[in-house]
Image 1 (tube, rainbow, N blue to C red):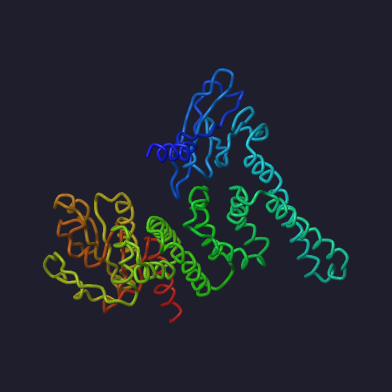
Image 2: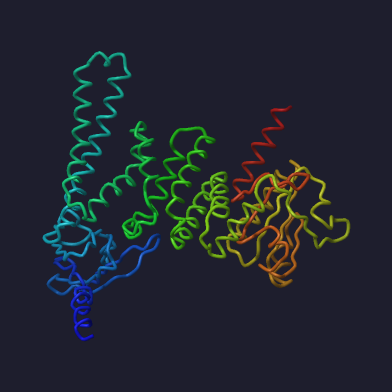
Amino acid sequence: MKTAIYLLIVILSPFWGVSQTISGNLSQLPGQKIQLEGFNGLKTYPIASTIIDESGDFNLTYSLSDYGVGYLKSTDNQPLFVILSGEDIVIQGDALSYVETLRITKGKENQWFEAYAKAQPKREQALSAWVYLENIYTQDEEFEQHKQAIKAIQKEKTYLKDKSNQFIASLPKNSYVKWFLPTRKLVSSVSTVAQYRPDEIPETIAAFRDLDYTDKRLYKSGLFKDAIESHFWLLENSGKPLEEVFDEMKLSIDAMMEDLVFDEKKLNEITNYLFDLLERHSLFQASEYLALKVLNEVSCTLDNDLENQLETYRKMKKGKIAPDIVLKATANQPTKLSEIKSDYTLVVFAASWCPKCTTEVPEIAKLYKQTWKNQKVEVVLVSLDENKEDYTAFTKDLPFLSTCDFLKWNSPIAKDYHVFGTPTMYLLDKQRKIILRPNSVKQIDAWVDWYLVKGNKMRE
């Protein structure tokens, strides 16, 4: 038994209390605080902090659990990204904001990162310039006869791509930076690819689909959020018709889910973020597909708030008939939503305690009086206030119907409509069929202007 315990201690002891240091000298920051932060998916967390001494020296520690990318920042708020790969790092320079003075004097992975970060932007600029010239020489009659020039341009393009690939290929197989550099390049290249190198869009999208969002290296890289945003930004700005864009987004969602279905935590985190991103960009076909995909095909447990949010797309998707609503009506007013005689009805869930509602509801009232009412669009506000005084103050000057049962989130109306946040809006037709789920007043007003105002003028 003693021998077994001794062997266990010998085996585990290298992993106990293991920490690495980030030290160095920032000559212009004596007496200032410097801190190291790391990444966990969409969030950052503090690792260590210290005060730089009067000589400019500092020393910080990090552990193997921080493996990935971190960033140093001081009171000048200029971050310096570092590879936390289990090596000691030494940095020399004037200040983090004076990047040109900074040198990594110890830490191979960070030296490789530094060398690539200095050279690659120049290669990317040169490559875009050669692509621009190639387009001129191959598409303009005045230049297309210059075959030698075209060959020289193509040779330079190949040379620049090879230089980048050769550098990465030369790095040790298991080094973090060997994975990080091409991933960082992928994420940062999307605007350049979309604008200057559209022929690279298919391979760039394919590379995004190959990313494994359960990979700890990505989760700790600081690229987690950027990878999601860049991927779907490129799809949205790929130059394809909107229906084709939605088809591509569905393929991308399918590719992401292949790995995520086995990681409950990351599935919830990414679904929540991506759903909100698609909604904010009014990409409702894609957000609906994501919601139904996760609800119908994923065996992981979803967070309650996320599940309720996604459920709105299954129960309250376009084409469904919205539940009827009993209204707290006064004399000569409809007592039910179904009794309203208008071509369209906008149902708005809002509350006086919701900051966005206090801005958007007055805007709805203004547009209703100016345009919407004349276009036969009625509005019904369902308040989630909890007391009569707040409700009365919130709705007294509104030019349209409102109702409230003072039960907040426990309101049967809110539950019937699967409302999880305010403001929430549904545009219904005469039969209460959902025809639009606007995410802003601007969007519903644009719909009224395009389909009703301009549509009526065209029909005239």
